[in-house]
Image (tube, rainbow over all chains, first blue to last red; front, side, top):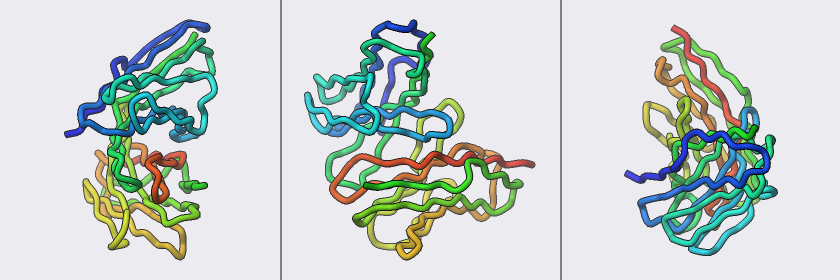
Amino acid sequence: DVKVTQSSRYLVKRTGEKVFLECVQDMDHENMFWYRQDPGLGLRLIYFSYDVKMKEKGDIPEGYSVSREKKERFSLILESASTNQTSMYLCASSTTTGAGNTIYFGEGSWLTVV
Amino acid sequence: AQSVTQLGSHVSVSEGALVLLRCNYSSSVPPYLFWYVQYPNQGLQLLLKYTTGATLVKGINGFEAEFKKSETSFHLTKPSAHMSDAAEYFCAVSASGYSTLTFGKGTMLLVSP
C-alpha cells in the first residue's frame, strides 16, 4: 500500500512563527502536492512538485513556500504564520505518467495559528 | 481551465435508501474524473475514477459512477446506504497531460437509522 506520512497531525503556532509541515511518501512517486482544506471551500492546491528541486505554484501559493530536496520528502513552509492560515493541510503524491493516475493522500495536519 | 460543481453541501438519506451525489464538471479537454471519500479526521481515499473506456465505473464499498459527456456529469450512486457511508465525498477532475486535481467543495453524506 502507498503510504503518505505527515509528521504532525495537530499543531498550534503563534502568529509570526515560521512553520514547517513535513511529508514523506514511500512509493517513489515523482509528483507531490500540498492542498489546503477549509469547510465549504473543498481542497485548494497550494504547491506541487514533479521532481526533486522543482516546484510549481498552485491556486493559492501566497504566504507559503515549499522545499523538495529529496524525492520522497516535500515540505510546506509558512514563513510567518497568520491566523487566516489556520486550516487542515493535506499532502499527496502520485506517479508521473500523465493524467488519470491516482493521487494518494496523507492523514492531514491540523494547524491552528493563534 | 477546469472546474467541478457538487450540488448540495449536505445530503441526508435513511439507511437502506439510494445514495445519489451529484457532480458536474467543466473541462476544455477530455477529463479524467475521480470520487474521493473522507472520513472524520482522516485524509482522502479514492472511491473510483474514470479515465477512458467504459463510462460506468465501479468502485469500492458498492459505489459506482457514470460518466455522461453530453451532460458533463459524473454522479456517484450506491443502491443501499449503510451507516458506515456517512462521510464527506469529493468529486475531482484532471485534464489530459496534467497531474493535478481540481476538487469540488464536497458533499457531506448523512445516514440516519
